Image 1 (spheres, one colour):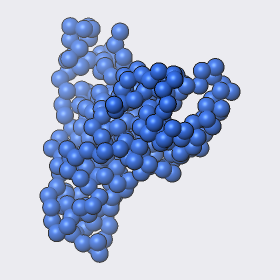
Image 2 (image 1 turned 60 degrees about the horizontal axis):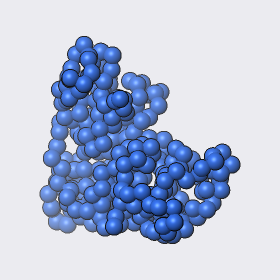
Image 3 (image 1 turned 180 degrees about the vertical axis):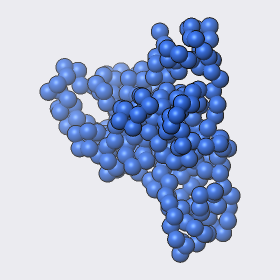
Image 4 (image 1 turned 45 degrees about the vertical axis):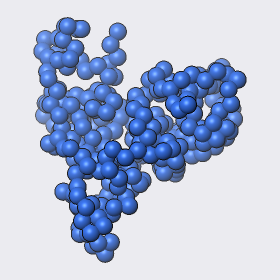
Length: 276
């Protein structure tokens, strides 16, 4: 059975990659576009529709249908399907750098004394070149300490997650003004080169190796709960974006389990490890 979250099909049209797998009146070949700004991927073509995920600046979106103000397709990094505002997309880019801090200012010129004319979130991708200690992009100048080469990888996913401490919880968010639990895990792992799917159940079923119940937890382990996920900071503490605190926090795993135990017979569904 196809998962509609990651298989692009509707009653009237489907991704041409699904031809031969399911019947559709029309098939469309994806047309690549890149996000000009952070934008939510929604479940329907409406600003009131539930957010499914978030596209960050420079990330690629494969457009299958363009109707009115909305584009329908999927994000290239995780194949998540939904609708984005058409005006938030532009010509595809070949990024050279990505933002490596929680928020990077864009300056009007290659100087910290130049006016700040914008900002980019962690993970945003840009095309730029070195210029007097800055990276010159089409949208402004990034300080070289705020961006890294597009193929550079972080060593520690938890250290990346800690960048987001205190960020507001946002359903569907991936770090542009807010973030949710699986978004935090996905973004943190992606920075280390581990490609994670978008949703909690997907991550629970596919990431790393399942740990035996008697194995002690360690930094970087992924703990999955009913509808929730987080990363272990050490043997006893979890970092996670959660609706209880409406923020990204570090707290004892035992406290999280105690809260969930009032509603779930099995608070922890899995414990997984992505590194040896």
